[in-house]
Length: 389
Image (tube, rainbow, N blue to C red):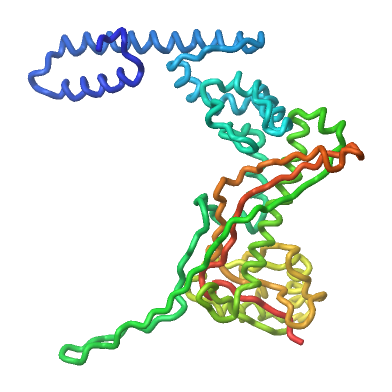
């Protein structure tokens, strides 16, 4: 191939070949050096053409014209995708597309002609990348939740089956000449984590909906992302609460401690955990935490730290100790690495718009949805602390 016909990938390949040839003792230094110079000229020419086409595209977009994108520009646009996602122009086009019920993507196509096509965009779903501004809002919602920020997400399609050990015999010492030890007895179980739609919806007036734009998307992302993440955190609490006291074939055990709240409650709970529970947290309401701290103050004695240095995470999915009924779980102590959160379609929020069911009231229903599966997978990695009668 002549150098004048080469594209960037061809230049990179040939440059690598020349680099290897130059290591040879009988290399034709002058000829190879001259070729490198020609390759650099061709590279500069390609970059100049890309910049020119980019300027033409920007000018055409301002005038509302369609732009024919060359393969070279397509590569350049993909390189600049992060910059485009940060732009106000892209954020507005994305907002208008979402608020159209994922139907009108004309403006997005003008901006991302080289990165999306009619063949890879489906109804109510998309390969269009989320604007950085909105992506950051969702990320902030995950990071601000004390429970969910400690659970590493997975993004695997379909149902997950995670195995765990129910029981096994110990290893033995086999003395030379002695009879062979008994075969190991190993009992295994498995947790199936099925993804479900976690939803939150709100109503807005027709006037608010029709105004639309970035500010409106800000509002619904802030509200729905916060509510969805909060719901998932409560599902984590429920997954632990609903696990059995003894492991079954489909559910690992959660240890049980039933007692009145004292300064030693958390320390006693720690003693029931397996050795694999290492990064300990205590999950409870703020009122319960205050009650624990008050025990030390009320005693007037040096009883040490009743929290035993454990990080406390707050939730409203458990009752306050003072309000809990007999045998109700009011605290969870354990390691959140025992929780798996799987998001088959990613953690971005998908929206559905209903402007029909309450049309007579001029209201539009907006449903935010994330597909997620939550599972507890390690025996005795948590303890349920229950209120005694």
